[in-house]
Image (cartoon, rainbow, N blue to C red; front, side, top):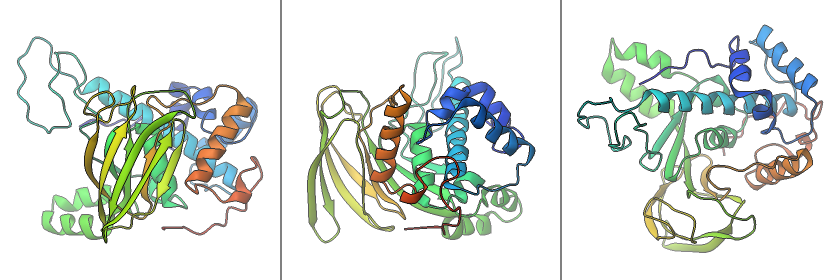
Length: 313
């Protein structure tokens, strides 16, 4: 267990900018913006941390910073979760920690089958799909990974309650706190945009079968309701791996949620265009594919009304 207390979305937002760099934050923005305007936006957030975004563009800036904060926290965790040098190790945590050579990170992203996000930026995202995409972009999960979010940012409080009444804290956590978002399916590897990435065969409840293929650089959202489970068969092309080896078929189960099933063929590591115009087109295409933001709010600074209600579906 590790804590990155210096990475946050209020007074410590400047630490995120300093560690990640402004270019890493700007790469997540689906609109063109100059450096000074972005710096002003971030500094205003730092001195007024309790303010909420007034436009969709303001929201996109905050969620871009959140992606980098989450990414940096995971990188710090990987650096700290390493094997002891020169000491024989005994596996005692879980299969998510691979037995590697001493001094190397123990984190195996293929073995992580559940990611839970907590914090105001995730719990209070206007659309649950925004929280799911932030987690996917930041952590770049591999294979088949279920994602969930803290409903109203109550996990820290349940941690305190568990010291007094563990059973009550557990019941609240399962029934009221944890909101299943869905499942992300993503292979490791990169390729040329437009080429075939993998084929999938989905066995849905009611014995309904969906078969299709997805190209490199695409992301797709399929409906799969909460409390529903489906079987999936994944056949990657050469150069892509779902955990069984390069180009080898994998079968498994995917669980639904308030968002659904996301098939992510954008590649690992995720490649974002360096040219600003190309980046804007790329991010807007991805956003439209999963209905990430309202269409009228994609124009950049000053666009959108900021009055969109939470869409949990």
